Length: 119
Image (cartoon, rainbow, N blue to C red; front, top):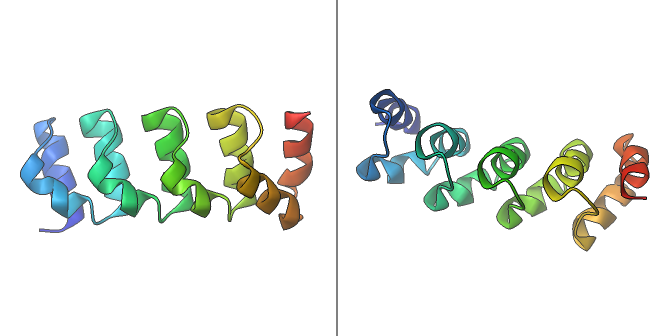
């Protein structure tokens, strides 16, 4: 069974299925979707997979944890867009130093918006 099939089975049944979680946890997208749509909360087993993708790390922090997703911060920090929106909508303030510095060094269009936001 693939992570997608395992997730779809759990979603169809509308409940957590522990015996499928190992399979689901191998995929970033389906780990995030399982957390958001089925568990409606953190999916610890899937967090290592989620943390490998900037988009899903940001979404997991915003929609599931509703706060910092420290495991996903290194990958988020590699993308100026997600770093800015992580600061604005998740942290609601200045990024942790390593993320702050990475964003400032990126010379991306979001640097100006970030600086205006934190001042």
